[in-house]
Length: 92
Image (cartoon, rainbow, N blue to C red; front, side):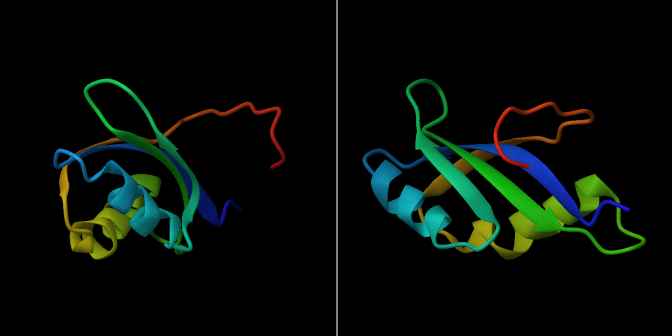
């Protein structure tokens, strides 16, 4: 049974705060990759969150966002993508 759920979270920051937010994200255990990107969003974070037995994937990610991301200053918006099926050539 799957014990973790992966999500891709794009983050918009206050002007000039991209590096500070990226550093704060990188310090979270669940965050596996952080990329500062151009465009409407400033950062792409790839997270892997533990999943409890009776919890849905989206619920696990939602709790992570509420408990971890909401505490990081200068985040003004997020958009979260939870994959349904994944294929990767990176390590699993």
